[in-house]
Image 1 (cartoon, rainbow, N blue to C red):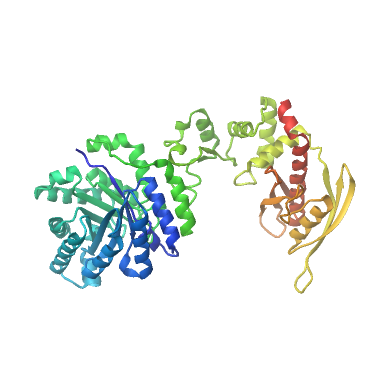
Image 2 (image 1 turned 120 degrees about the vertical axis):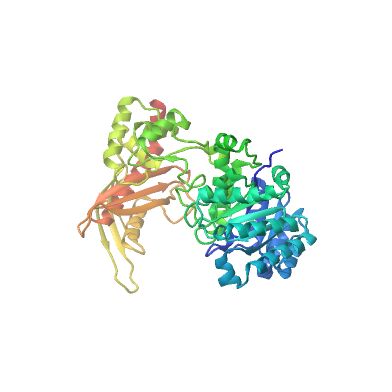
Length: 540
C-alpha cells in the first residue's frame, strides 16, 4: 500500500507570525472550518504556551473544527508539552508537535547546548508527549543547515521514542531542490536500514517537510522532497508566514494534481490527495481578508491575474481552445472562468469576444471600425480597459457621436486656506432642454466642477437612492508627458441604480477640463444607452 500525501496547514500558527497579522478567535475558527472543508489533513492551530489568547484559540479550534487533526506546537520541554496537550486534548484527532533546533548555529548561539544535550532533550520530549497523546510529530528546527550524520541520529532517536511524523524543516529557506532531495533520501535510507521500511511504505511513519521561501524555492523544495519520499507537506494558504513566508499549499496541491503523470512516473504511484480544489480560491480570499495580506495579482493559482489574458495572441488562443495557454481549468480551483482582460496588447478576437458577451453581435466592418477607434483612443492610455469603455466606443460609432450634452464653458476657483470652499460654474448645452448653467461647491476644484454638472443636469453623486443617483465607480488622472505643460487624461466610470456602467475619457492641458470632458462623455453614453442601447443591440 502506498501512503497518501498528508497536507499540514500552519496558516493559523506560522502564517499568523507574518508581520502585521493578528487574527481574533472568530476569524481563526472561520479559517479553521474552511481549511477542513478544503480537505486539509492537519491544522496547526497555534503555540498554546505563548499566551492565554493563543491557548484559548487552540482549545476552541480543537473543540469546534471537526474531521481534521488539530496540532499544537510545543518546544522540547515538559511545560510546553503539557500546555499543548491541555489545549488539544478534546479534539477528534489531536497531535502534539514538539521541536528543537539541530544545527550547530542554533546550538551554539541560541540554545547554548551540546549535540548530546539536544539529542537527549529531543528524545525525552517525544517520549513525554507520547505518554499524553498517541500522535506526536517532531521537528528538527534548521534541519537543512544541520550536520547530516547528527541529524540522522536525532531522527532515529525520536522515532524510537514514538514520533509518528518527523519534520525536516528548511527553517530559513536555505536549501535548493537537489540538495533537499538528497537530504530527504539520505534520512529515509537511514530509517530503512533501521527496519522502518514497512512503516514508511504504509504511512505509519512519515517524513514531513516545512519549507520557507527566503530564496523563492519553498514550493520547489517541497515537491523535490516528495519525489525523495516525504509524505507530509507543511505550508500555508497564500504562502504567508515569517519573513518571505512558507510554501504555498495551493501551489503544492495543484502542482501534484496537474503533473500527476510526472510524479507517478518518478514515484511509481500517483500521489493521493483528498482535496476539494474548488475551495482553493474561496479559502485564499478568506485568509487574505482576515489577515489583511493582499494576494499579489501575479500569484500562481489564486492571484487575480493567474487566469487573466491580455496579450492578443494569448487571448486568441484561449478563445479557440482554453488549453493552449492554461494548464489548469480556473473553475477547478474556484474561479468562475478565464478572464479576457482588455489592454494595449489586446486584438480583434478579444474585442469581439467581449462585445458578444455584452450582447453586441457585430459584423466585420463594424468590428474593424471599433477596433481602430479602440486602438487610437483608448488602448495606449489605460493599463486595463473596463468593458464599459469598449461599449462606449460602440455607441459612439453607431450614433455617430450625436449626443445629448455638450460642455460650453466652465470656471473654477480654488481656495488656498480658510473657511471658503472651491467653487465651480459650468455652462452645458442640453439638446433636449436647452442651455443649462449651474454652480457647485466642493472639497476641491474637480469635486466642485462635478457637483456643478450634477446640479445642472439633475444628477446626484451623494448616494441618494433615486433614479438619477449615480455612483462614481472609478476616477483617475494621468499625465501623458512630463513637465508643467503636460496634457492630462482623465478616466471616469459611472454606474446607475440599475447597475449599468458607462465610461468616458477626457484629455486636456487643464486637468479640471479633462475631468469634465470625461464626465460629460460618460453621461452622454449613459443617456444614449438608456434611450437606444437595447434597440441598437436588437437591430444588429
